[in-house]
Length: 333
Ligand code: SAM
Ligand code: SF4
Image (cartoon, rainbow, N blue to C red; front, top):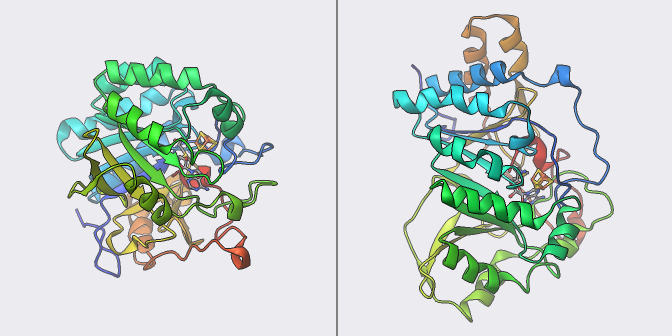
């Protein structure tokens, strides 16, 4: 086995896989209302996804996250989790996890836990049902709440991901912190990233720098810096009043690229070496060309030699264009 080390000496140990570009929500910062989705022939089958993921595990990936689009709306997705869980059993993989909007969690939480999934990330920007409907366009808060209850009952650790949206949910952050504290959920705030055309919305209007948010939260809460690290870009603090952890993902106000350990695969088998750059490698052609993984592994190694130093997202009045044209649902958050 040859490990994947990029040109900047960073070991690639984390693979995020967007298993579908489809979703049962249309969050305003993520998708436009009328999205055109990919034809089925372009999308890797669940067996192909298993093959690519397993090749990455063979090359030193320790942590695998399935995301989307909405991963749990892909038909028969549990068979992929089931197959991948063999790498947990063998010890090759230390974590298999999922990022979801929570709409299907009441159906799948127990099965996920049985298959060795320990933690799930659930995206939730508001606790207000009307606002939730406005942000997600198609979502129902009560279903997500039922999903969260099922996750808790199944013993899954839950982290809530909240996109900070100026003038939309910035009056609710204290409530979210208190609620997560009560429920025993971790909470991570994310800055809006300039990805993909989202229709009429203006990202300058949505953008709330987390440095501002943090300052505001510190007026009410005591945030102790802690050393907790999930291998991701979030920096965590403990909220003394609730005992809960909160994290801040700040791609715009604080560049987190130096410690980047990850690459991202789309559902068509395109590998992005950086969330914020266009350069990518096609893994579908070598995958489909042969039943043997030789060409696939060579293509992966070649791609890793092109992993860039970092991204250069900026949002201001002069840069109100997507930094990359693809939507977050393509590469998965
Ligand atoms: N559907 C799942 C969900 O919502 O969790 C998984 C995919 S979603 C693309 C992953 C994460 O990306 C979510 O937490 C979502 O809020 C976040 N996201 C989507 N578009 C974003 C953007 N433009 N800027 C920042 N975060 C974004
Ligand atoms: Fe769907 Fe997740 Fe994007 Fe919302 S953020 S539209 S739930 S993929």
